[in-house]
Length: 265
Image (cartoon, rainbow, N blue to C red; front, side, top):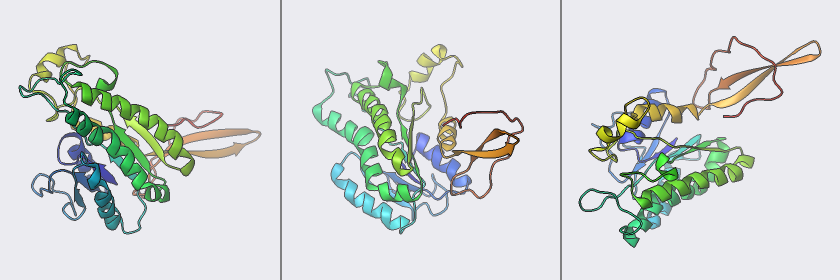
């Protein structure tokens, strides 16, 4: 698996969860690998330090990733890296106050990097019947009191890109999905955000990176079907079959029902 934005927050929690499940993860972030903060196996070897805000760094990053894959298939690409700049007082940058250079940097990290990585690793994903997960945000569909305009519009664009990628990659056996987390307790969240937003959230709290990581983990499963013939009827049982890094199938569900097809995930 390749995951961007692995040094903190959602990315850090995701790497920890997948590592514990036996996955090999190639991490990408602006920061060098820190063995104390990231105590997973082969972390330093499978870490690529890259600034996704610089499109000129992408070819080198792809070379480094492919060198680590060494011809092996890629089962998952998690585009998690995100950049949400603030003004000098730590406040929200609006459409009137965001500098042009900031617009470009935000879109390079949040929007262009995901498609450049997916295209650059297309053959490896195809060989692994891989899954791409783009991490968007609820701010892509509403004006947010803390997230700036550049961040919000880049996430909206990423959601639209996900739909296009799903259409274009599907014929090659690659699934593309997006998740849009709400308020999550990460470094990207403003200091006062939790106190202000928690009262209007139904659960009266903000989410945690671990909760988002579990949703990403869910998308690694494929929806398979088992078919039994009994008389003139076909009875279908739906079971979630794990991806290539797993060796065991999940327990078959006890409840059986007739269906004309298999629900998609």
